[in-house]
Length: 560
Ligand SMILES: CC/C=C\C/C=C\C/C=C\C/C=C\C=C\C(=O)SCCNC(=O)CCNC(=O)[C@H](O)C(C)(C)COP(=O)(O)OP(=O)(O)OC[C@H]1O[C@@H](n2cnc3c(N)ncnc32)[C@H](O)[C@@H]1OP(=O)(O)O
Ligand SMILES: Cc1cc2nc3c(=O)[nH]c(=O)nc-3n(C[C@H](O)[C@H](O)[C@H](O)COP(=O)(O)OP(=O)(O)OC[C@H]3O[C@@H](n4cnc5c(N)ncnc54)[C@H](O)[C@@H]3O)c2cc1C
Image 1: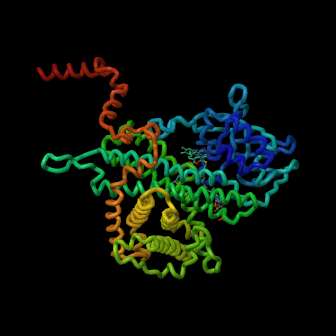
Image 2: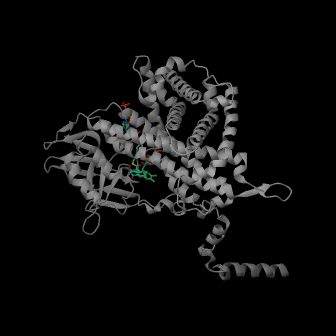
Image 3: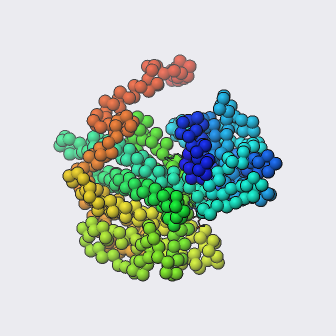
């Protein structure tokens, strides 16, 4: 994040100076934004950067305990430099949060520089999974940096101390977070596909119960309940991959537009990266835990790979923006878009469907049979109607409040659900668009169409309350969707293992005895157990000190 921050907020000259050093590892940088007292509320950060015209320097200072930088990855022990986000103060006025390059450690002996206090913030969730990362704490005691270490693409401070705002939107200050959020969506697909690969392969070899006449037991992958829990996660792994590919295109397109000072899609990029990051990471964190449960007791072993995958993955719901805070950002933009509908301003991009407000507010879903749900047009319209009607309902309720801001906070739980509905529409839309493309490989397109329908109808079934409450569907149509879902599971079943093999993960990368490509699980589980340090001695340590005296004492007592 150190590099993208300098790329996005540094001048050409600053990029030329600092990026080669970072690329060659002559300096190691981190992104020091979050503080002990503030993370979500970036505008609430307390670290100060006060310009001293006498020396043409900024004085970086941590005025309070809560202003201590806290969490930045790589800060505690590794980094020599940081992009530090601080309140810029010049001529006695506070101009809000800006980025500054600050050296933290000596390049001679790595010791912290004068005025810099550094350390690691301590152990984190899980069995040490994330403890390979030195998330750090950092405090400044009036540390001086040259004025030219203020990142000056978005705004400048002159030699005399005058603040100058460039003609670029101040939101570009948040650009690094947009970049990482879009990469986190692809990251979600990778993590989810790993968990699903383990669970599908294990479910194919695991047999429990079966015919009463001593015949072979049943593969648990054949149980309808296993399929109804597992196949939507398989479909989600593909869905997040395709929407992540599209989001990367959107981000690249926005970045190219920024180069020519076209800021027209900045809001779309913010809404899509924030919303997709929130929805895909929440779904993936829940799915990894579900995959553990789908593997029964063995899923709880470290050798299954699932506990570690879960412990490393779950902070994704928090870093790069708490998911609720990000979804509220999407909700703000939805409300703004709804308010502009009456002005005749046509929504564009992923909001374009809201321009069909007259139709979508009164449309009646035409589904009459379970098979009708295989028609992408019916799915698309149902998801558009649900999302639009939820957004309009929120806008109407906010409009009844004494003021917009009050109304927004009062209705924020409903706004959250409207934002999720909007983002799920984007995911469904991009999956439908993907399967409409030419896809090579015999039968591949059909399998992806099945997974697209599984993702859409499972999501519809899970959020059926939204569809019924907004009148977007009738209960009968909801029941037909569930009926079709069961039929789709049966179609996915013969190809389930092939669909996870297609992720092409090596056994090493997967790190799971349950997800081995060869399915030879039981010998691997048994062999792995003996690597446990507890098995280095046959009689456990502590027997003579604790157990033997206890056993002897009980034996005496029993003979009295
Ligand atoms: C290279 C990476 C590779 C792989 C990545 C995989 C995994 C990552 C691995 C580990 C994680 C590592 C590091 C983690 C790093 C971090 O966590 S860094 C810190 C992250 N912190 C945050 O995300 C803060 C979250 N908080 C917010 O974003 C806030 O909500 C806020 C947006 C800052 C609030 O802004 P503000 O106080 O200004 O309030 P608003 O009035 O809501 O916004 C004002 C206007 O600005 C618009 N806006 C807001 N954000 C953006 C944006 N990002 N881009 C564009 N525009 C933005 C907002 O819509 C308002 O607009 P307006 O309504 O038109 O005025
Ligand atoms: C593993 C990890 C790595 C990280 N790496 C970095 C890094 O490299 N650099 C960096 O700068 N930071 C980093 N962070 C910090 C991270 O970005 C923040 O923790 C994150 O942005 C959440 O902010 P917070 O901790 O202030 O949460 P809070 O905002 O305090 O969240 C607490 C609760 O308050 C709720 N909440 C907050 N505001 C609102 C609101 N307006 N409306 C409704 N509910 C609200 C949230 O939804 C949440 O439920 C990292 C964090 C983790 C866990």
